[in-house]
Length: 151
Image 1 (cartoon, rainbow, N blue to C red):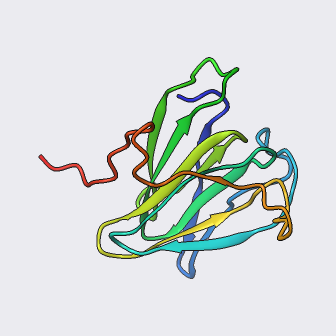
Image 2: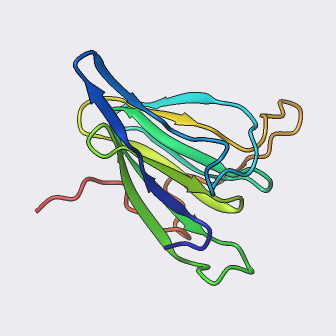
Image 3: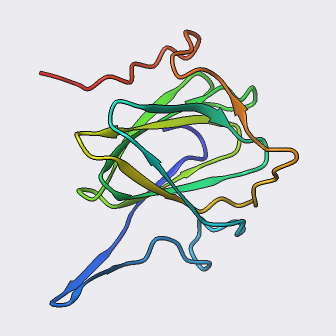
């Protein structure tokens, strides 16, 4: 696993009225700082990738559909430089994925439904100087295949 990445299974507490799922708590050992909360959606067949943050740590939870989230480590001082990880998260497997600053990441929907991701980043978005650095989804240096696994 890429250094600093954390994945935590979330508890879904059902009863006869529905369910409750805690996504993140300030007393969690993975909590760093609260910046903001937002939701992003990706449609089937679309890839939102690649980008990284210099300051911000992201905390992804897929609350609708299923998402394939890929991470790629290009940090010079990282013991896992060059590694790529893939996680499938969403309604069939509720997890929080913590993505440290400096790690490229992106995601796509799995299946025929859009994937809705809640992000709880450690920093607020700065409209004047965004902490976001991009590469193309098909960047040959990363060489990630966003396709579906068949077989």
